[in-house]
Every structure is written in structure tokens, then in C-alpha cells.
Length: 259
Image (cartoon, one colour):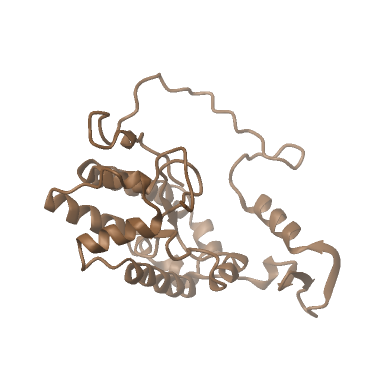
């Protein structure tokens, strides 16, 4: 029995046609970095608040080395999209990560791993026409049986170790920014750690997300607003990863926006 099914393209489809897939990966990575470098990182105020003193002083290209880049399989959204994340994680997310529920083995596919496999396939003139039908373990097994030197578990471990070190280096948590503490599933007073009745960790997390997210500002009535985009593009075909005449007809993938 298959562990999942999806309706849109995801990281598996890249293995149908490695050459165009590598070009697409380069474009996605550069687009994501440009958005980060010209967005939050362009603000000295943001960097000083969000990053440690060491991180604040780093040149942009040095910060780029700390970005975690990966695909999810199954995907978080049913389209091909690149996870592009500069630490530090929020404390709540760090706790979930350390519990083993974030960046999960055989779901988190590091960009470096995907790119290495595609380069090997391109050099060998290989493709996996049925890649879109494989589960994550099957895809990893196919890659390792074809190229024994490519080890998913090692690549995943390297990414996790890098995340821990980068998070420790860049974290800049100010106790004054936190109104409560969470112990297990309980919301507590941050000074006494005594449980606060009537407020759940889930509700507190939802409030944090609304406070931190950039989407939908300015808020209207406490809810996201201002999301209408009034500059529509002219209709035209999206670039595709591979033509429908290729062995894997499912590989028609438009350029994806990344966050």
C-alpha cells in the first residue's frame, strides 16, 4: 500500500528529467536567496532584532551558508516548492525539532542531496521515468542502488547537524519578548512556571503566528487584509520541466514561487 498520493508535482518529478530539473533548481535557489537578501536581510533593524550579534555582523554571503534548503515528500503544499529557511527557529519550533517532529527523516529531502543525485544521473544519461509513482523510501532506495556513494541518511544527518549549529550561532532570544512559558502542553507564568488556566499552548501558538506573519498586512479587524494583487500578469504558458512527449508525462512543472 502506498503511504501517500498527491495531485500535483513534487520533488519526485525532478528525477524524470535531470537536466532541466537542475536548471530549475538553480533558478529556484537564486530566486529564494534574492527574496531573502533584498527583503528581511536588507533591513539592519530586522537583522539586529532577529539575529545574534555574530549573525548581525556577518556579510550576506556568510549568512547564506546557514540557510537550510530542502523539499518535503510528501509535500506541505501540492506543488513543487523549495523550503528555504534561515535560522534561528522560534523556541516552539526548536522544541518540535528536537522532539523529532520537524525535518523528519525520509520526509526532509536536502537540496544538496537532490542536486547531487540529479547531477550523477545527468552525467550517466539516466532518468527515472516512473519517479512520480515512488514513495520516499522507494526513491531513496532507487538512488542508492544506482549510485552507492549517495547516502540519504548521511545527507539528512549533515543537514540536521548544520541546523543545530546554525541555530545556536544565530539565535537571539530576548526574554522580554515573551509573555508566557510553555511546559509540555501547559501555558505557564514565565517567572514562576505555574500553570495559567484558560489558555492553551495551541491558542498561544496561533496568536504568535498572527503576530509574526508578514502575510496580509495591514490587518483589518485583527485579521489579515490587503492581500489583493492588482497587477495581473499577461496570460502566457508557464515554462515546463519536460515536454509531454518525454517518458514521464507528469513532469510538466511550472516555475514555482518560493518563500
